[in-house]
Image 1 (tube, each protein chain N blue to C red):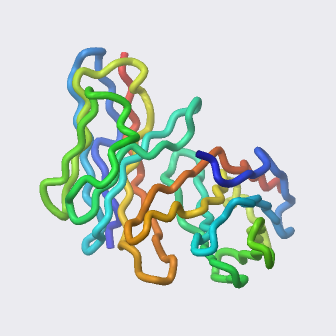
Image 2: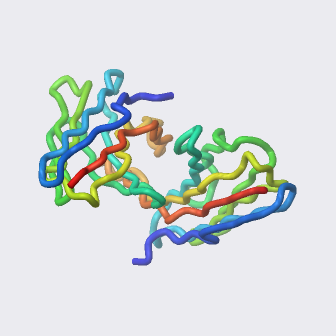
Length: 113
Length: 117
């Protein structure tokens, strides 16, 4: 039930911005886009989420296209500690219930010195 | 806030034995999720609870798997009998329910790594 498409891997130099793309062309109007990451051997960690406006927090920025069919997660100054698998998730809408979150395979981001 | 607490962190057992994994969610969270992660299948949702009631168990692989949530602060995932193909990392996560802002943020535990020989 994959609802998002991400590249399997990306590289980024330390100190540079990492831009991770995600396609979600079948997203519904009331579905949110979430980003999580999983550092090796740890549980996934929430990064950011958004509906249609761009969002920024202390970890990252989320840019969602106007048609909402794709988004980009931006880590403005990547560090070695940002090496992880990044998951783009569209929240399954089950009405008033939470629904299922499909994590897919994500993008393995490797930050090199 | 100690986060989501899982135990044991590592479990090695022999085929046919019963395995019980435990989870303590974050206090106040009304949703609890059990996920399984393997190299082959990635991160799969097994079951989730809302207010201690199982809502969706369609991800539970077979009758050998069962999950309970007797109260708001404790959940178990049991495998009986265990098989080598059950070897995986099992994650528990909890969250607040829908709050109207899309903030269905899951907080994951550190995971329980199960090896069935």
